Image (tube, rainbow, N blue to C red; front, side, top):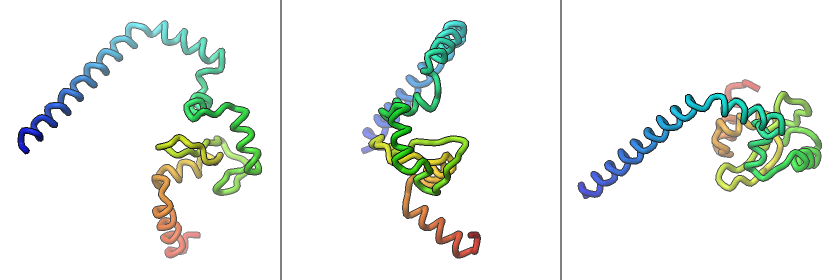
Length: 135
């Protein structure tokens, strides 16, 4: 049993060392290629590819038209709180399957994320607020 434990810790140490070598290598490459990185980012922005939001949507397999359709299908409002205006809209999705659930205002999306998408935790928080008369 002790030998297996030592092997596991050795593998973890080797993995961490490999990650550190990769981090050092990447930092060195970035330092030596700043002009290339800036120019590439400029080109991507010009093509509309560097926008953080659309890049995230691409990971979920959603384009701007699909986002708009989803938003309209839920009445052009947040699927949780019903807000019709927000500084930022988010595509709520399951982090394991990447299945898109709905469009939420950023506040609701952050709230769900901070509660770990757990209905049990959210109900407990609602009970707590009601118990202490915070509504």
